[in-house]
Image (cartoon, rainbow, N blue to C red; front, side):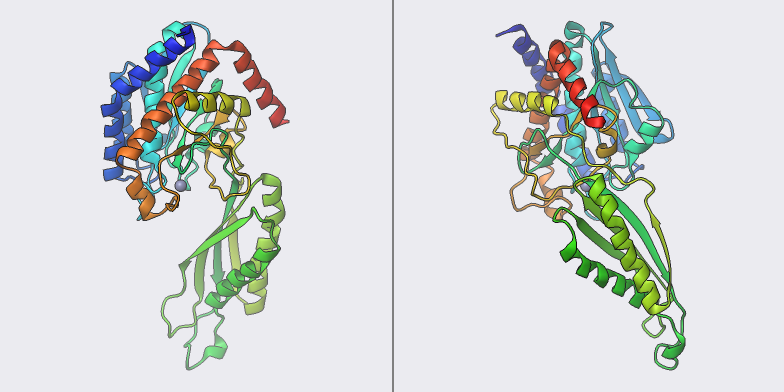
Length: 394
Ligand SMILES: [Zn+2]
């Protein structure tokens, strides 16, 4: 074995030795799901394991009381490498995004890197980033300066395949409200203005628009208030709509076309529209190809089969997207589920626990720690990562 493979081996052994604690974090988070920014137990479980492993732990960062940062510094020069943990679940659908696996893998990778950090130099960080599902916790942490000084960062997402250079898409959201006029729906309908019709016409307009949209655009929505009583012409309806596209430029083109459907429906019905588009759309992930290549090599060293990313298949978005434009990042997808299990489903929640999830946690933690070791030991790789990042941001 070469020096670097001995170092990687000792990081992997530390992760194996911590497996009971890592599975404990994941299992408890699966059994007791906490929603965005309320993840007090998940924070405590992760911080306890990190403290036990010798990390200096800060619980609560800036305005986010369920964020955390755990640090082991070597005292020698070298990159500061962060592993991101996410730990909120979804209402009704639980850990259907697998954040319990994301968290345990991040903690495990940090423990693996910390084990060898004195030998290789630099700093190992675990950064707890709450409120991923619609909360944009990472955007808040970024605004408050918690991504400053990090040289590279990574997190994994469980899915169907091992894809190092994975992608996520850009997204934005609009809160919609129509205001009409109530009237007896049978006795005096001619005096009413129907806010539900406005909403349905807007949705139908968007459905017609879909055939003219680029193939990567996804528009999806729910009605959060459809009226109060069937015998009253609905005078107030609300909805939430998300628009996603591969990149910010497409998103920018599509937003006015969606907005025209919303205003058009108001004009058709006489209802008044109030809508609030999210200030800053979430950007697509800037996945660092050099870092992803190292991750891919390490996956294959672990004996895993890897796949290239598929530009045509659907993709999710996340709050790592925006921050990936400020720090070199990868967010690989790691194999955990069968091909018939969609994220954000009851089936995915069920798949986020058990032997496949545990294998995913260990494989992910090891591959991330090994990639961090490559980065700390290979100055040329670190330079390549930084150069690629600087060129992509222009
Ligand atoms: Zn999700």
